[in-house]
Length: 360
Ligand SMILES: [Zn+2]
Image (cartoon, rainbow, N blue to C red):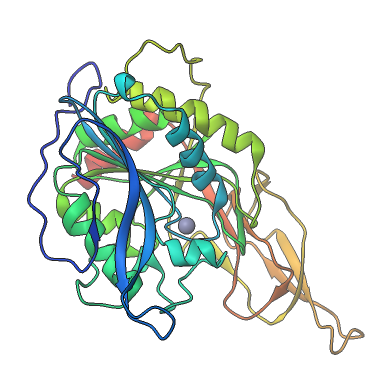
């Protein structure tokens, strides 16, 4: 990365074996749209393939950026963001290569599900995948071995999906190196959503796309753009502008198009598990707080009603830590172990960098 924020020019490595094939040529200039083809041999289609939409826009040398949505099939803002961007982006405006996978786990997207109906695979828990595995593992393997090598930056656009809703946020995993932290923070500020949060470890660990990026030395920026199985329009519009600003910042898009400056970003830190509040009992959850609200340790988060014994006093759920509510459960019907809320601690850039120095 340079002082100007530009990523270095990417190089494409030779693909390793995969059952997935495509007639897209990632090495030539132009704008190509087509499919990654995942072979299936079923009763209905003996010699068929599952289509996974892919587009590559390449213009000479420059950074290589991979834009992914539909990693979880029921997270819609990122998918719409990339479909709109794909139709609008002009090849002469690109510098280097932009690859777009707007429905990465296409069978899950088609089924409106977090996981694939073909193998119950959660793509973000399947890395590094398996060349000869079932569909979701084969997709993960293709992404890690064919698309990530030679890529400089991955943007993985998530939302809360059907069961969660997030305060629209940009997300990074804390790297060990201070230089990398500073660069990732510059990307968070360029993307420009009002909230950016830093987590010490991705929820899916090594099996997530983050783990794959770590293994292949690729920078990764993610988002939580809303969720609840719907489309947060405000977050979508902010992300559309943020994506242009981000791609210009890393040198993957020309600066000919004027893009509004980013708003101030409030940074938070979230620790997986510690900052997750789980349901201690089954029932119908009546939340007592909302997204973005400041809560304190011991505060009532909500109550769980028993529909089978409505005369019984509901179970009361308390926050164990103080913080801001970043994420909430959407369905009211709840079982033991369902995640009800995520909270996060407010942070300054100085705190972040000094924490990193302690880590180093
Ligand atoms: Zn997701």
